[in-house]
Amino acid sequence: MTDVNQPSDTSLLAHLEAVLFSAAKPVPIALLGELFDCATEDAEALLEQYANRLVVDKRGLRLKVSGVGAELVSAPESSEYVSKIRQREDRLSPAAMETLAVIAFKQPVTKSEIEEVRGVNCEKVLKHLVSRDLVMELGRKESIGRPVLYGTTDTFLRSVGIESVETLKREVAVDNSVGVTAESSNPIEADENHESPVIDGENNNTIEAHEAREITE
Image (cartoon, rainbow, N blue to C red; front, side, top):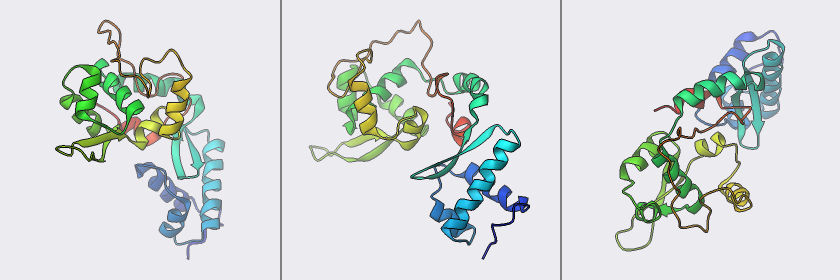
C-alpha cells in the first residue's frame, strides 16, 4: 500500500498532479484511493498536501474539491490572463450561442424543436457544439421517428459556473434580461455586428485547467 504520509514524496504529488490534469472531469476521492493503492482518508491527506504545495509555491493552479471529486482549476490571481486567452480560443458564433441557449433552457429538446425556436436549420451548429463537449445526446423521444434528444454537458455547466441544469433554470427565471427561458419559445435576436459571446468570460475567477486547452474551435 502506498504511504502518502511522507510530505517529502514529491514524486507522489507529481503523479497526483498528472492524474488530475489529464482527467476530463473531477476525479472521485475514492477512485484516487484505488489509483494510489491507499485508503480514502489517505487520499484526502494527499490532496491536502498537494493543495498546500500549490499555494506555497504560488503556482497558477489550485485544487478544487467538491462532492463529485477533485479537479484542477486556474488560480484566482491568474483570472485576468486566463480570460484573455479564453476570449480568443473559446469564442462561439452568435448562431452557436443561440442554439446553446435554447438547449440549456428547454432540454431535453430535439433538433426540430430547436429549429422551431430559431427558425433556421441547426444541424451543423449542433454537430459543432457536440464536438466541443458542450452538448450531448440524452436519448430519443418517444414520438414518430424517435428523434434524438439533446442536452448540455457537465463541461458546459462548469464553464458557466453552475452546479446543475435545475440551478441554471432557476437563476435565469428571475433574470428578466435573459432572452430565452424555460418557458420562452421566441428565438434570440442575433446581432452579427457584435462580437460573439464567450464561454467563461472575465467574470469567472476560476476556470478548469483542462478545459482551457480542450474547448477550442
